[in-house]
Image 1 (cartoon, rainbow, N blue to C red):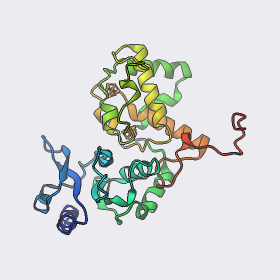
Image 2 (tube, rainbow, N blue to C red; image 1 turned 180 degrees about the vertical axis):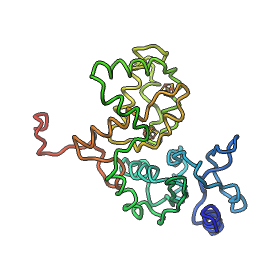
Image 3 (spheres, helix red, strand yellow; image 1 turned 90 degrees about the horizontal axis):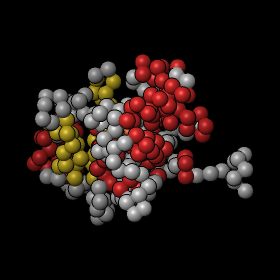
Length: 276
Ligand code: SF4
Ligand code: SF4
């Protein structure tokens, strides 16, 4: 039995017995190797679930859809390790109760699909713990090296040029599981904090504000830069912030559901004078 068939069978069993009310997984997309999120609530529909190496979207953000978990029933979701880390962050930030989430874990290495053992987020501690050893990892080494060789002024110019392309569609925000605010600061117009039209100052402000909000929280799933219609390398800026956070605070995002958010916690013996 393939991993896909095993998970279809598990989904059928959980839905038939009422152990979960919904399975969030992947279905066929509009082209051969595209996958899209599907939401299965009937055991008769589990055959629509697809699992292969094209399943790359981090589906964890759908769990915080308004009202989905408010009846305290369980929901199952297909997740790669970065999605499992996202569950930890959402739980640590009180956005969901991790006990309501049944994880169908999987990973793809060298085009090989493998199932991850476990159901609850705690059971994946070893898998996501090993990410810490290699973390933060970033696939586009060439781009990373190019950025690292730049002076501060060159880097500033690089990002200015990249952000100038932004059309303020907010697809990056909508695709990100960590951007769960019902009302984002950029949608506020009384007062208006960030200009909503696409021009260089507002674009820079928006992208920097977003990068700051993701510092110590981004799980590097890539949902944002895959969603960006103008191909701004958003994961690169988030990766650089993750490197800074690791160096400054020894923190890798999403290691456990009780991990304190790095920019929302402090130590009384912090050497900075602002802690009195
Ligand atoms: S910022 Fe991008 S890479 Fe990071 S968690 Fe959000 S969508 Fe994923
Ligand atoms: S997805 Fe890209 S173009 Fe759209 S708001 Fe985000 S950075 Fe700008």
